[in-house]
Length: 315
Image (cartoon, rainbow, N blue to C red):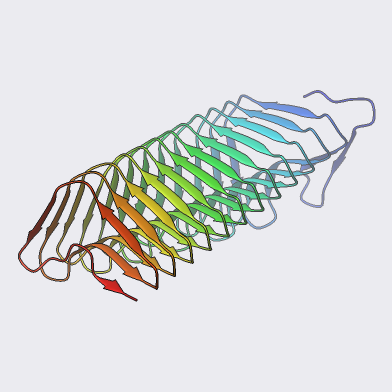
């Protein structure tokens, strides 16, 4: 552990070390286990903090693994983490311009949160695989404008969990890894804010009533190059609630058993279906738009089977 001369060390009421001061570095090479409300593994108050978490991080019972208050913080998590139970958070940063690099695998369950950043211009790079299981469980949560989340590792979202949740304008989510979403209330990427951009380069597989990409806000753009498979009632690959949305489906899409590929609720939407689309089964829908002045360009081949619908539009 290193810091500048202005840094102060003290112990909180739980007997845990708290570091106050700018330009602090903490290197955690051993395994860290945090359990219980108010318990924290590493706590720093100051700007330009750096935490290198090479050992495993195991958080439960409402504890926090890493807690930083200050701008321009960096966390490199190579050891992976397991976070379970409500109010448990693996990494929490309150401050602008935070950077979190997660190279290890993450398992989030039972209402826990893997990474939470409260501040503008945050960047989170999820390079390892992520599994999020259970209602109110969240892999990455950002509350702030101009957030960037890069999901290069594969993500599996189950039983009401959320992979990435961003609240704020001008957010970008780049999903290069494959995303699997299963179960009612489950969402792969969720953004609430205007001017959101989602680049889905990995495959998107949605079933059991889950949502692959869910955006609430105007002027959203989704570029889906990886293709998607959507099956079962209430399952939606891409849903946007807002005006002036643009969706580009360049990959191949297979929609079946009552699922919906793309749904836009708002005016002046444009959907470009450049890849091939197969829609199979009653109540299955390729593209659905509810709003005025919609444009749908079906440049790819479409195969509609057994009561499916290609482009219902309710203006």
